[in-house]
Amino acid sequence: MNHRLQRSAGPAALAVSLIAAGIALGGTAGAAKKPDKPKGRIVRLNVQGKVPGKLLPTVPRARNADRVSGRTGATLETKCAPTSVDLGSWCLQASTFPFPPEDAGKNNYFYASEKCVEAGGWLPTAAQLVGAAARVKLASTIDDSPLTATVDQDPTDGLKDRREMSATLITTQAGSSAAGSQGVSDGAKGDPKAGEPDPIPVPANPSPETLQYVTVFDNGDAGGFAGSRPVGQAENFRCGFDKQQGDLSDEQ
Image (cartoon, rainbow, N blue to C red; front, side, top):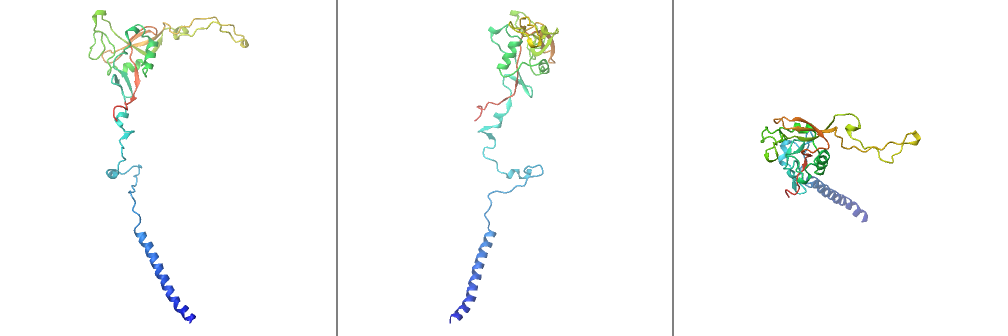
């Protein structure tokens, strides 16, 4: 009796196993046919490593993509101050440096260099000023056009041809008297190991008359050289600047 039951149970068990296997395979096949749907689309880059132009309209833009920290690119661009002229890679003051009346006569080469640096810029060279003559109203002669040049028009203190200081230096002599000297301090001693004698004290000469800055003038918008003056003498000047990043407070 038991032997018969075992013989008849074998085919039944096999059938159940095959059905179970079929259900399992069918479930797996169904899952393979219906995978999780991807949330995005894969875009292949072109040979330049960029998104193909025809697909650009379909590429979603990042939220706030036109802004950095909430500010537009226009406010982050480098630009010149309203009081200066844009000369491409740098800026030049549209008019001469506005030093206070109490500093009149003090505006020599050292003063000009210091004030331009304090303002965040530099004293321009003669080449820079001459090159900018067609764009900036440089100082000029009294017979020049006041529309394109800075001309003296105040007869109450006389009428004079004008010129401007540059950072370019020249000298009329050779040696320390031409380039300046720090002198020799009292108490300076020679090197005894080298058998040097004690040097003779000499006063410093940081502003020699023979060291001069080149001056320029408008010269009919073409720029020209107007001689030179000792570094210790006063003259009008203007400052040059690097372009600055736009005011981030302009636009939120």
